[in-house]
Length: 129
Image (cartoon, rainbow, N blue to C red; front, top):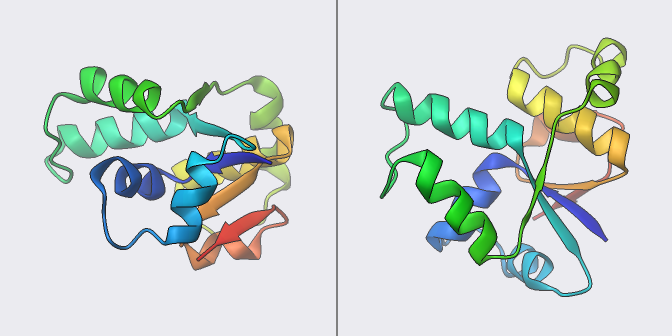
């Protein structure tokens, strides 16, 4: 399976947060799955870090790539083909970061790991708690 981590799932995974289900942990660690972290999530974390909403043990430009690589998570770039899906998405979710993750999942046929109920309203594959 090809999995795309929602930003909060990546952060919970790398920090050992107890809100992350065993099912998610097993899915992320499974050698049968290819796990992606979008550059959109890197952007989101960096913005939240800069405005003081998200503390991290190190600066995001150092910490995030190290954690992604440590856990064998592949970086997913944003392409024009992904952005093209945006005009067809209903305006259910107001978060631009999540909307772009949905576009990437649609373009690359990825399953999103999330606990965000609003994402469920979109025509994308979801692995949920």
